[in-house]
Length: 308
Ligand SMILES: [Zn+2]
Ligand SMILES: [Zn+2]
Ligand SMILES: [Zn+2]
Ligand SMILES: [Zn+2]
Image (cartoon, rainbow, N blue to C red; front, top):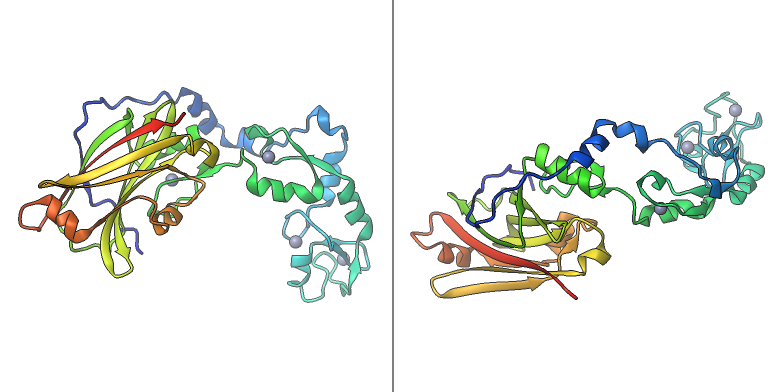
């Protein structure tokens, strides 16, 4: 589906004023994105001061990724990782010698003896891991950066929540609203064009946390639908502490949805495809809009609350 830009007009009708976020803490992070990101600081727990040098030995000289068994070497002792080995057509990339099939068992053993901090140490993870389980941990580390939650674009920005909130506001021009209730009107002049990936994102700031309200049009099977759902800017365990409801209606009819916000660890598409939100068939949406069915005018109200 092609990202169709935002062609919804959104009319905010709630009374809450739009309050500027205090992103003073975030700004300093954004100003020096490299200063903390790449510096791996080994703390006292690690104990081996020469770890950094050994770690460099375990970096594949060809792809610069970390090497895991089987680690290979050429007859002259140049090492390379197993995925590079299959790509270099049996020639050592360093000395052009024929590679053969020589394992570097010593280096594999050294790797086994290493304990290294999580690569997200600078983001708050203070755990230390054996070399071979570090990668596995990092894929699930709760401190790993989040992807930008903005849907419909291939945005590659990652970061912690304050960084992403500032990024959504400054780079995607997303509307920010304070408060746990909302009353939005989505207006679209040509509702027949569901084919465009039309979407809308609003960020809510309540309970000191941030939530993304998505609204979009897509085809569910063959049926054109609109869908609204909430994602939580944080991890899944914290997301479960909240609930939300959404309502849309008109002319005496009403659809309601109650759900649990999904973490932004789950992609926008994953949540949408799991149908975990308020889904409005286009015909019903046009009925709710009134008039002559030429314009979509949906009023979506909602509330976020904290579960005990
Ligand atoms: Zn490699
Ligand atoms: Zn070589
Ligand atoms: Zn970690
Ligand atoms: Zn982005």
